Image 1 (tube, rainbow, N blue to C red):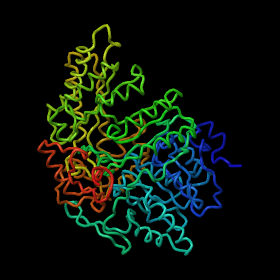
Image 2: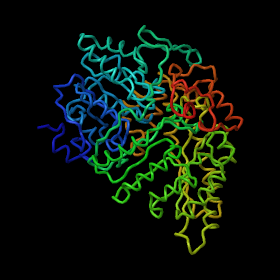
Image 3: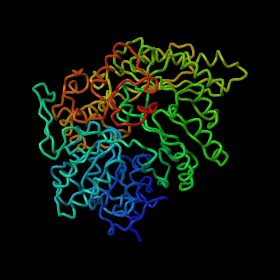
Image 4: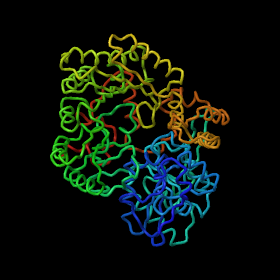
Length: 622
């Protein structure tokens, strides 16, 4: 019988002990002694967040389909257990076997957002794995990173043995096969890293040297090992209807962030918003076959007992068979107590008609993401939404029974003016006004509620805005004050509410997103000062980060407020995502000129991803 790593005494003393015991519905059980490779798959955040991550569910299923591999899971212990594990010298363990992570061949860490970087060090530290890759021995697991943040892995390069750039279904099997071969040949850790570096999409940071100019910009980025590649090419699955997808996903014991069946209907986005990294790195759009989706819906609902199914995509409205799949799901499951959720819909007549079929309109609020308050600013960011479309969508929604609207905006966008900022309040007011003008008093379901929220713009790698200056904390907060003051001037101010994001976190995210290898020391210092769970408001300690930045001689203006030149070597330039740098430069120039670029289905903009040979780039070609 499996023995738990934590005693009953400890489990009874901590919050949500079910986070640490495993044995959930659909958990894979294998004999660790009868496999060749043990792989610990880590999401460096609390269990409820990690269990909602589709990428880990896919890889967990994919790895465990192999008889020679046992993939288990590990998450960051919450602060209460973290303290106990350090006091009692309890090593971090995997949920399935409850064995220490140190015993595994691989520790794979999903890098979903920059603010989890200190949690990576927490996981390594509690696992008794040296924090720096150069200090690891033959007795330590190979530490590999994957996920969106690997598109600039330099700020965490010192902590990883290798990174996987791209979608996990492509070359992981080859990587595992080569590990087995190296093991059979009694090869060393270094031997395996050389073998791995020859695989497309694999980046071994120690095989590259960075040289800096006197002004701290990068002078050169060169490989120091003949096995390393000059460019790391992003890996993509082009036929996503003929690849791995879990039919029996794990079902958590406690409520997770996404406590439902998640069906990915497509990858990528046709829209080309200039602030959006996901829109660039997941190009081109690839749709799943509708029969594939129908089949998975049946099997996943049956195997999990979930009562909700979510259609996942960066822009669900753009899935060409959305109406058909929705009608199928409504006909098949709605009468059986299964709810259907549709994130990432554009607000138009088509989408509202769909939502009216799947939602109880009186229980839900409608979400718009105009991103900017003025039309000029929406043209700059290539949002592709006019005020007329937004107001028409709101009008249709109000007539359809909705009376609660959430609006998402960004502050600090390139070329932003006070007029653009005040436009957030003015657009919110117009939507509230529309409700009272359009809906007769006797037909209203109470007052209208318009909640506007602003996040602060963070320039990300591989976007047209990767070169731009980012606002300081003071600039961000001044802009939020302008919105707040303008909201209070509005006639319908009692129907309006305004929220804004934490500025300190956004500035730090900017440093971690566009930083180079010098930032590794900052992250290490912050962790040693006690920083973990930096994405959580109750645990984030900006003072410790500021001290770490200052102690390591980091000039925040260099990384945050400085405008980069187009010919500067950027820390991520050695990665090829398919989208060309010239295309990003052209898009930046179009942004400055307030020119809108049509979406991929309207007209090809020649971004470069047609070289992958599939997806939306070839939809209308014979």
